[in-house]
Structures are given as C-alpha cells and as structure tokens.
Length: 236
Image 1: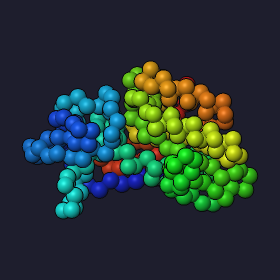
Image 2: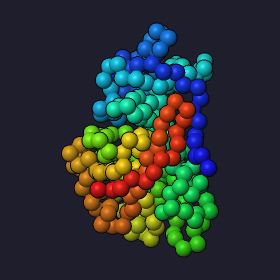
Image 3: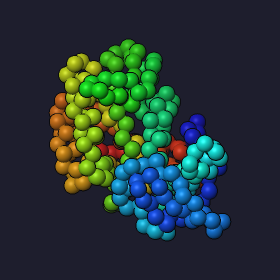
Image 4: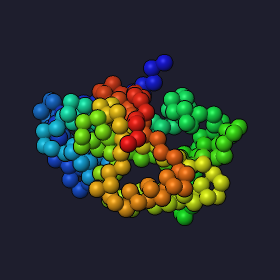
C-alpha cells in the first residue's frame, strides 16, 4: 500500500528571507515575489540560506492575510518539510495504518487531550488488550548537520523539556508514555539528541529514559507530490 498524504498543488520558488518567525519572502518560479506564512517558529537551522529552493501552497482563502504557506525547503538535494502542522496528522495516520509496530494494537486514538500540569498530549492511545493507555508526544524534526543523521532540538526548547518531565509523571502514575520524533526528510538513517543545542533538553531526555519513557524516531519522504512514510531511524 502506498501511504502517501498528498499536498494541494504546490508552487516552486526560492527563499529570499525568513523574518519575524512566521513570515518568508519567496520568489516564485514565475518571477513573482510573495510573502508566505512560515508555520514553524523554530530556528530552522541550516535551511534559511537565501536562494534555497522552496515549495509553497497557494491557500486561496480570502479571509487569511497571507495567501501562501511555506511547506518545504531543499537542503543537500533533499526536500525538508518545515510545516509543523503536519506531524500530529502524519503520526496519527501512521499508527492507524500499522506503520509503527511499537504503537500497534490500540482501538482509539484521541488528539489534544488535557493532562498533567495544564498541558495537552498530542495523542492519547487507548483500548489495547495488553498495555495501559499511552500518552504520545510528537516532536517535529528537520535538523541534519551531518549526512545521514537527524537531530533534535535545533535550539533551546523549555517547552520540550517540560513535556518530558510531565511524561515521566504519567509513567509513575502507571501509564505508558512515548515520544515520536517526526523527521520530515528521507536522507537520514540515524537519530540523536542535539545536546549542544539544548543541554537542558538533553538532561530531561536522560531522566525520561531512566523513568521508562520510550522514544521512536521515524522519517518521512517529502516531495512536491506529498508526504510518504519512509522508515524508522536508528537511535544513537
């Protein structure tokens, strides 16, 4: 079965600049320059060189201030998804399709369920015959500083560390907790925590591992056609 999630028709162009976190000026192949919504508040380390090839969606929604949305940028010949609105949907689809064996066997998957200290879990999986309810946190990944290696995070993420500590609490309460790293690029085979980018997240990761929180990195192939499940990565 071809597990492809299709984009709406994409338009090719080149990045001119990204600014104020959520704005990106793109010169389309037609020669027109547009301002696109950049649905990624992170540093996007390694992707923002002027002239980088880009893919944008034309929204055609008059109510929106920006009519274009940035979907992907090309690095080292590989399209890299930058839209952080995709990972939750991608991982939910992958679980339902049985593409992540560690998360098979659940009868129900609910998004955005409140838990912990005023937080929401990305997915809550329930109804497994042999496992407790499972709290699934999803992290978007694009960073690759070395060929074949994906890394997270690309900057300090206090929110990310907080999520790991809250998942530790859920494990101590008797639930299962899993972090899925959704890597939106297919030119990688291994995965690591970028401790130099955020030592605090690295410490929280160590505590979570010791407590029994599970970590699963999976890669997707991004193309002008859409997003396709690629493979699970080896954690190093």
